[in-house]
Length: 120
Image 1 (cartoon, rainbow, N blue to C red):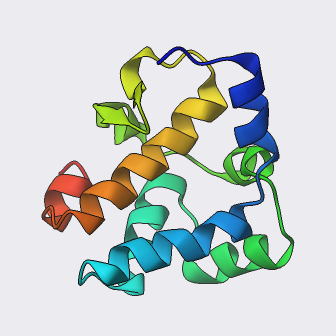
Image 2 (cartoon, rainbow, N blue to C red; image 1 turned 45 degrees about the horizontal axis):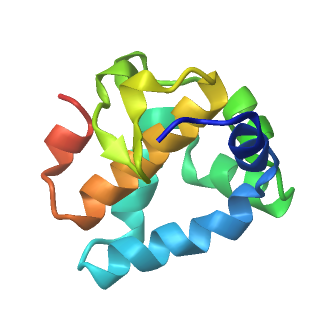
């Protein structure tokens, strides 16, 4: 699919705390844990559990969430299709970061080994 300005704006304005419970539900329904989810989020963003909770309490948007993040230098190794978009073809940096996170959550839910998810 082709990304649009409307799509990119929608992602930027989404509240991270409103999406987070869906990540938890997705991974837990597939037998993974919230702790594993937090490990994946920390790997990508640098946010420990305390900082993650603070950002959720502040109800930050994805734009603010990723502005505060120190993206893992290996994040560019995250490739493939998620939500109908090929990650490596996305041009908007924020949309790409959000899809990185979606892809990691998806890989966790699908039972992929943690060391492969974390691109070790």
